[in-house]
Image 1: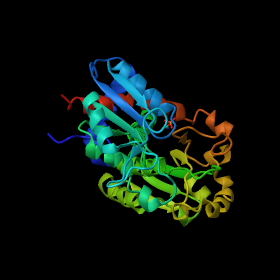
Image 2 (image 1 turned 90 degrees about the vertical axis):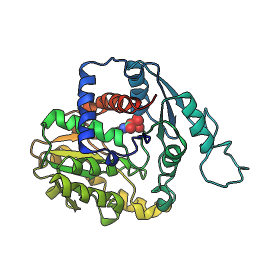
Image 3 (image 1 turned 90 degrees about the horizontal axis):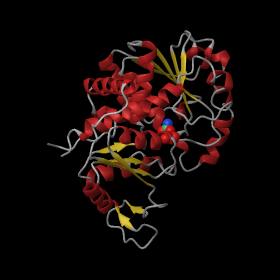
Image 4 (image 1 turned 120 degrees about the vertical axis):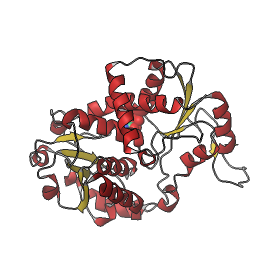
Length: 336
Ligand code: CP
């Protein structure tokens, strides 16, 4: 049997995603189980985390398993990913050994590895998690790289709790200002999951330079062809918000400016008015607002929006726990 990973929701059929979401709902009602009894997961964080780390550690514990958290380069040896490198620099061991050794210890491996933000043509290859998937002999779970599939499941679970069927819901993924250029992972993921579940999706961003990588735009177009949803890009705030059922906010750096962020900063800074505020939400169809968190208040969204009944970001964050337990349980079923 070939090894099953959870690297992207695109590798999982709609029926499989529905089954994961059904299992997550069951875990929300009954938190404890033995699906991971005697099993363990290594969680490798190359970048900071609050929600992902906490929810995976607790999730493994609640299912009778054990989680080991490692921060390579901090509390574990720095890892080399290139092949053929003469390792006379900072790295102490190769991913080939790390992935295979961990596979002898644990039943699952989770990896968080953000882009380096220097060269998108390199970052978009997602080399770190692909290397773990190549060398590991146990399933690998994406904890956020250039997509964030666990966030996708938690997001769609929260939307289903609110709306039930999501077909043809008017969904706006809006870019928002942030003082730093951020990862496009959650934005890519929002496009993938919203189009997968048949929603009418608007990608609202300041200029064409903020449109997401063509790989994800194309996958989203393929998704709508199958799901019956739709996809459009807009730079018109009022038109995008009007009648929306769902507003999902995220900030990200413009791809053409990778490695020369000083040139992108003035564009970003001139679009602070993309903040999600009460006036914009008033244009929606009594819509809900969400964000993956962490969120800088009064930069990405106002206090009033964050504290309003429309905000379901806390529900989405809670759902990380439930969906990840469903993912771990599903993958662990296929390990000895
Ligand atoms: N949304 C999310 O992944 O949160 P953390 O970065 O805190 O894990």
